[in-house]
Length: 313
Image (cartoon, rainbow, N blue to C red; front, side):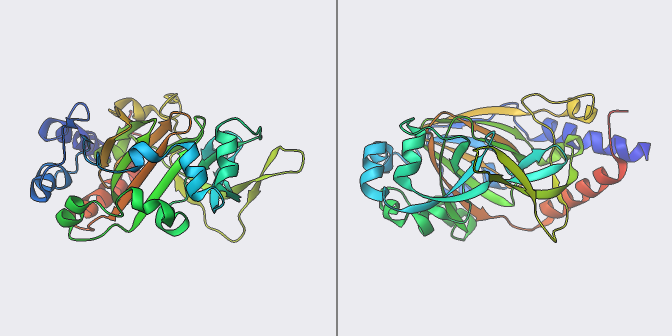
């Protein structure tokens, strides 16, 4: 078992020595599809791309006045939580947000402080909500990124719209997508961990539950019935509990700020934690990853990590 632990400690060390960057690089513009695939998708490395969507009308148009005019009466799905943490661990539960249907104007009233409400509100429904719930806005952006679609030989599975309060936080997790994250206004702050740091990243199993706001304005946690436990990362990278998760001391997170007009390429299987400025608006494109040998190797590392437990001692 000690030999396996030593091998798992060496995986991220070798990755950093061989190909990973010490910081997330910034590119001055998009590359050709072939070059982008060779330099970033193939090696599974993140980067921030400037001037990648400078021709989008959304960059100048998407302010509260325009959005009220264009989609103010549209009913959208909004995640509501007591603390800003949707889809996150709370005690011994994995708690999902209350999904509330409300008009876009009602949401803007809350974000702009015109209406006071208990709870934190965040448009974060990841089911291609831009094209499904807000198709009126698609003329201000692209519904796919041509050079990425050509590089991957496919269209995105989903195009998502994000808007919320500063208190809304996305807990650490990974996705099985090649993700292009475009900030329209405000900024997003990412904490990133490569897949090779999986041996240092704790997972535990949790009973799934949902927040529900009561008549008095307080929130209760309601267990989901007839469901299996959910594996999730309990660690908060902003304040890691090293006593409980000592292996995380060996992790090497990358910090990255994505500002308006910038695009983050977030490769598949990278762990990420996200914060935002108040009222930040973003659009992201999810392209399904290739389930190739890299995925197989990741599954192997994950399985071995689950077997050996902590690598700290």
